[in-house]
Amino acid sequence: MEIILVLGALIVVALVVGWLFKVVGSTLRALLFIGFVLLVLWVVFGIGPAAIWQQIQQLIPGGAPSSSPPPIR
Image (cartoon, rainbow, N blue to C red; front, top):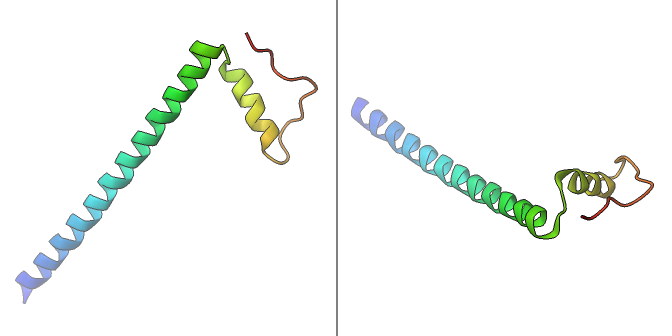
């Protein structure tokens, strides 16, 4: 009876660890993609982090209002 309990626990642990690796892998892929897009915006179009952050704040309800759009270099 004890060996069945140990095998069940090992199966549950294997499933949880497998799920965790999938979640971490997906998260890392998404972070790399976002970083690549931000790098392209910065290098190709000259849109820096401050301009992107200001635009994000304008999109969020209750964000800081801006009197003028950020300059594009």
